Amino acid sequence: MSLSVLLVVPIREGANVQIAPDAGVLYLGTALQNKGFNVTMLDCSKEGLTFRDFKTFLESKHFDVVGFRCYSRDHNYVSHHLRIVRQVLPQALTLVGGPHPSALPEFVLDSMPALDFAWKAEAEEGLPQLLSYFREYGKEIPEADLQKIPGLVWRNTKTQTIVVNPPGFGMDLDSFGIPAWELMQPDTYPGFIWDEYYPILTTRGCPYPCTYCNTPGLSGKKLRHRSVPHVIEELRFLKNRYNIHRFSIIDDEFTLDRRYAAQFCQGLIEAGLNLRWDCPVGVRLDSLTPELLQLMEKAGCEALAVGIESGNERIQKLIQKKVTVEKIRQRAALIDGVSRIKIWGYFMIGFMDETEEEIWDTINLAKSLPLMRANFNLVIPVPGTAIFEEALREKRLVLDRINWDTCTCDQISFRRNHVSGKRLVQLERLAYLYFYGRPRILWQLTKSTFKDSEVVWSSLKKLKALFRAGEVDSRVPMYVREADV
Image 1: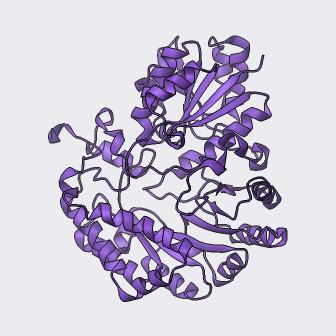
Image 2: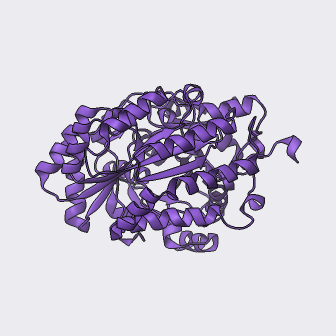
């Protein structure tokens, strides 16, 4: 018997909802298809579904397994989805994976009674194993078999405890297969920053211990690569099937291995696909060289983001990014003007012990660097990061009192030592004003092509939100302490 599996990108409401294909769900779809399972994908936000619509959808189909992707902001939405699944399909196996359960596996399984299993880190290897056992045993899978599945989070009914199996990061990335794009119908998406958005993963993992990032817990501390021919095969498929014109590399560290990045660029040039691309997630500035940038431009790269985070030396040491401000300045000067690739900078303000003077160091650094764009985001303690664990230890947040719905980069998320929440919002506004209000940047924006103007419009919408009347008073803290109630 072949199981029918539904993979769901949950409903997410709000003005800043980004509707785009989810690469993680695509890879899971491929892993399950390769093992003979019947897979359906449902992106609730793309389809504009309400919870009532979701219930109607379930009532019109039959699924043996229903799994959800879950970021921290999705916690309450996924919980509601699960209750509906349990009501409509009481015998179905329910699963949740993604960054949120990877960071808080026990909490997620314990707080969602309608959930059968959660997943920590990658599931391409373990999920097909679990479903094979489910097909054989139903929900009464022997404990000995559950223990074999990497990353599985499960309830031990004998000991009344939650067990988190160690994740596995050993599989060759090529063995995951080409993502099952046809299941998600990418050409039906409304577009992301550009007119089309096709997220491509070429590597996984990150060896750096940055305190604000949860990547090592999601995909391991070792940088792993897909082979260049394997990535080119995926791009050729997308070109032939959907006539794509551009794609986005969403690796956390695409340029960290410069040799691999160069091989990819050379392979893309030789393939003759004539595609434009960007790196919007952010690469390390100190990983870039003039030679690599020139090769990336030749291969079709139009823009990339660099994660700079802070312009203050003390803060750089605290967040363990393993780079100095002087190194940032030197590398920025080295690559300035060597290509036509547009470089954006990502900055963070409002670290737990950061002072206003140190925030101004970041704003001034951003202004001094040869950047085309800059994003300034308030620091949030993302689950799975050292900042999150520190906030828990210092009682700055209580886990079961988190308002997950406001877990976004533009929310005041916890109490800082030196700067009030109201002042942080003012500083965020000033950062955008001081960066974008300069003649050089205004002139660059004026010269932008139509495609670039879509990015500009996206930035302007964020600025509009930041400067909205009453914005400061309307913001709801992501974390609520007993003392604040």
